[in-house]
View 1 (cartoon, one colour):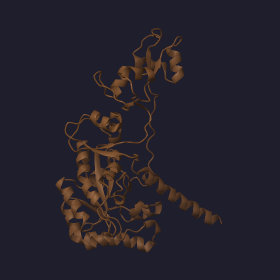
View 2: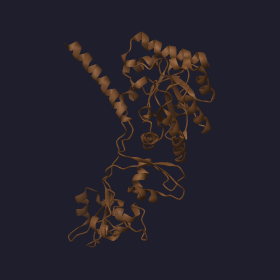
View 3: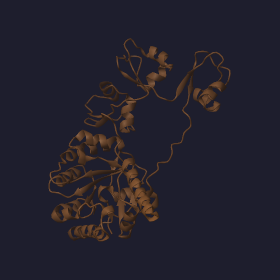
View 4: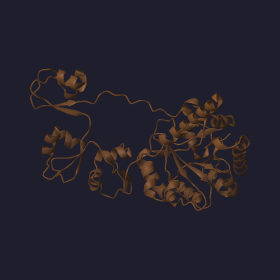
Amino acid sequence: MKKFYYHYLKSLSMYLSLIIILTLFMPLNIEAAKVHRVKPGENLYSIARKYGVTVNEIIRTNNLRNPGQFFSTQALIIPDAYRPNIYRVQKGDTLYLISKKLEIPMDFLAKVNYLTDKDELYERQVLYVPAWPRFHKVKPGDTLYKISKRYGISLKRIKEANQLYSHNNLKIGQYIKVPAPEYKPPERKDPQYTKLFPDTFFLSGKTNGYNIALTFDDGPDNIYTPKILDILKKYNVRATFFLMGSRADRYPDIVKRMVREGHIVANHTWSHVNLNKTTSSRFYNEITNTSNTIKNHTSLTPALVRPPYGAVSTSVIKRLKNMGFKVIFWSVDSRDWNTQDVDKILINTLPNVRKDSIILFHSAGGEGHDLSATVRALPELINTLRMLDYRFVNLTQLLGIKAYQ
């Protein structure tokens, strides 16, 4: 019985670790989000007004580092979920009345919403009301010390935020800015495999720059893979293709084209098997037969592998490491296999891209599987991310590792 429980707990631990990995890097869920393609003459304010969201929400959702930089046809993700910290303009409202109602200085409210004195409010317009800084309206008996105790903010920081040099110059009705509590975000806790196998298991890059890598699973085929290669060639992007051995053997000319055009070819097993659920001999054959096939067609032996379904465990990673492989996961999942809607693919990817992201797409699927949306989405995605100053690199550049053994 003890032996049974030991194996049960060990299996449960492995399962939970896999769930943590997959959920940590699931796409950001933006309920009822929309894609807006920028037209000439538009700006963030006009786009925000059109959709009834705030400028800041668009900036945050799209990770815009330079909000003033726009280009025609740029894809912007417009959030449309319930949002805290907003105020919807009511009939008869003015900026002055709203500032009194919310007890926020009018100039501050205007600044965070990019409004000027000449801007007219309209009914149901969305105004952003930041959680911090807060504003305290001075009442009789108030002192800076009392305000600091009430909000749990040091007296020194309140004085600095308000450029006050004396405790005694408060005026009744005056607004005192209360800065946000000092807070250091916790370090991102990657799944245990990045700590157990820091030189073998990779979820994202380590350049700390605006570098990103496109990766494609399950190819090649003779329908979608050539179209994807055409797009990558047109936009001068180098990617990594995780190939199924059985398909690489069926379409050797496409595999050769990948290498000829500067892409990395990597191992995705022979038949898309779950490596956690196969015998030791089949595990070996799935990997080695795929590598041998790729070598026969390209003279290159892959050093990178991506287990199908993202199914890994400590034992799987150890075996792959002993076979000379680096295990490559992803940090952004397009979920392109699950939709034929270009906008959904963009919604799944653009808001989630960060420095050193590894983005997962597919260049082939099962019989009858339609990946035409992937083909249509790629040009928009590439253009938009480039205009946001991201640089497309291959995995060797992103991870600082060799692609071949």
